[in-house]
Amino acid sequence: MAAEASQVNERDAATAQVIDELKALYKEKLLPMEQASKFDYFHTPFMTDAEFDSRPSVLLVGQYSTGKTSFIRYLLGTDFPGQRIGPEPTTDRFVAVVHGDDEHIVPGNALCVAPDLPFRGLEKFGMSFLNKFEGSQLPNKVLENITLVDTPGILSGSKQRDDRGYDFVQVCRWFAERCDMILLLFDAHKLDISDEFRTVIESFKGHDDKIRCVLNKADQIDRQRLMRVYGALMWAMGKVLKTPEVLRVYIGSFWDQPLLYEDLANLFEKEENDLMSDLRDLPRNSAVRKINELVKRARLAKVNAHLISYLKSQMPSFSGHAKKQKELIADLAKVFRTVHKTQNLPIGDFPTDLQAFGAKLTELNFTKFNKIKQKHLDQTEQLLSVDIPRLMEQLPRQLYDRSNEMPVNDVAAKMASIATTPPPPPLSSTTSYSRENGGAAAEEEESLPDVPVEPPKPKAANPFAKKAEKAANPFAKKTALVWPPGEKKAEYDALFATFNPNAEGKLDGEQAVEALQSTDLDQDNLFKVVRGRTRRQLPSLPPNANAPRQPNFLRMTDQRSGSWRRTAVMVC
Image (cartoon, rainbow, N blue to C red; front, side, top):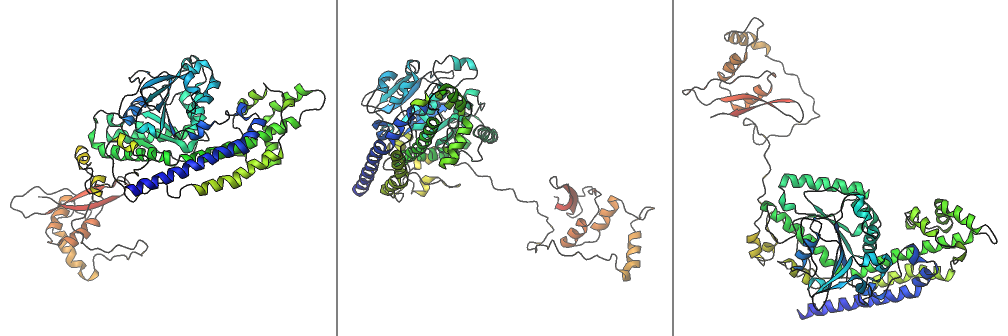
């Protein structure tokens, strides 16, 4: 244990050193170009030390009464200050649940100026938003490693959007740019996606790798309806995100009440383990996430600097500034294409919302823009091509050791062991993970019994078929059978006449059955005869107590192929 603790401390020290170097590189090589090109005005404010040093955060978004606040309470294992839970829209504000020495609520204005919290950038949304923003501090093992952000429930209709007093979509986007995971919560009973919810999800474009879906309250529907709801959710999210990639969806019921349909308890346990494993990995991957976000920011800042420099160069020297500025704003698409071709910049790094970018340009004077400096470009290029790869090499190769995996029973203990406990092993279809680890979680296994797995239905077998029958070659030529043989035709004709054929020289169903049963053929020959009969259904014989057991020939239909087939079944 001492050796493992020492390894964890070494990894934490190495990660902290990488983050400190990343902070210094941003101030030295990227911040000067952002300041010169007004990056904070067009995109996001300049990064502070608290954003580099902050814990990883999880943003919870969803419509009202989908269980966002209950999910946080379930994760923490206790109530937190200011929580409001109910079937009606209860949470009317953004709540940052953070770690603290005692339990209390911090108003939004004080939360933004806290030096150890990364919320200073929210000041740009004004007092109307800060009055609807608060922090909930409490001592909790989970919050020592991650920060949780609860959001107001999204309602339908434009009236709610107009009455907020702040731009709800832009606030969500601000959190999405800085968080490490975005959880979209859905209620299994209502999968409708309102217009505002759709707009919020679309604003997360560019952060698709952070998005996860949680299908909550799944214990309140049976297995069949759950399958349909899951398919409907995947279809709806594909329409919103417009991407062929499939999102990860966690299915479960994340609250402390007993399950309504306990036959899915094993499935919910596996899904919960997967979700806790992803949350547990957030602190370990925090440095990698910060590096990734800084790379995206550097690429965006580079494009922004080239755009500002190009607009500056297109302004006339003496007069006609206002007219030329309006022309450039009216044809921003052409400006983007020109900069893209001349500077060889990826088109994916350019701003996607031309209208919003143009609206911000109308408030500025292009003649006061700064032309891009080659020094800034060289520093940014060195940051992307030299410094960032060097920092990636300095990160611990093995962020955690999976050799001593142990299951954790309760959610709070799972999250409390984020820094030391690796994720639980995957569950098999027949045994729970407690059996795989020597019965370490036997009590939990008894409380959540395994769901019996239904064996696959066997295909209908022909009782007359041989046990070891070679597969027929579908490409082999079929040889025509000569029936009846010519040398015994007269003998068979006389035998056939004893069954009294009709005027057309044919036997009806009862006569044919009687004739077949009188032959005393073995099962193989009976199978061949029945299989080669016509499509006319043969009636069964009336029961006879004195007669020996005889096969009853029935006709069956294959609904999928539409073809007819015959099989013989023994009837008692």
